[in-house]
Length: 116
Image 1 (cartoon, rainbow, N blue to C red):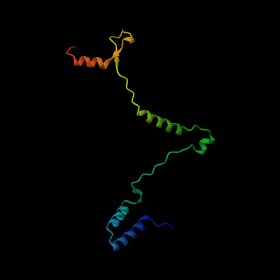
Image 2: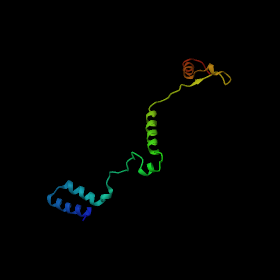
Image 3: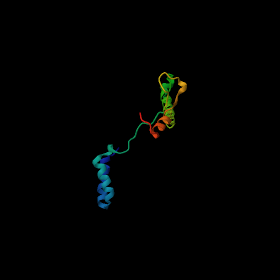
């Protein structure tokens, strides 16, 4: 036989009112008002570590495992920043061999007294 939560809480609250423990009384009052379903902890489903028996019997590929591996790989690669410095050439018709670092030329222009 199971006893409902509110019955147990009510009995404990009456006992605490006799003993005078104010902090515990307040906790039980809050539990009685909000009920057992309002617990602040959220319990979520854990990730499946291996494919289910049905998946193995039907020889389905383990997509979840592959997705987890891909996610871990992408998170590792996120830390590796790739920076390609801008390059330019004198004109559209100029050959690709005449490219130069654009930031250096911009810095030279800004530090000089030249005008556009």
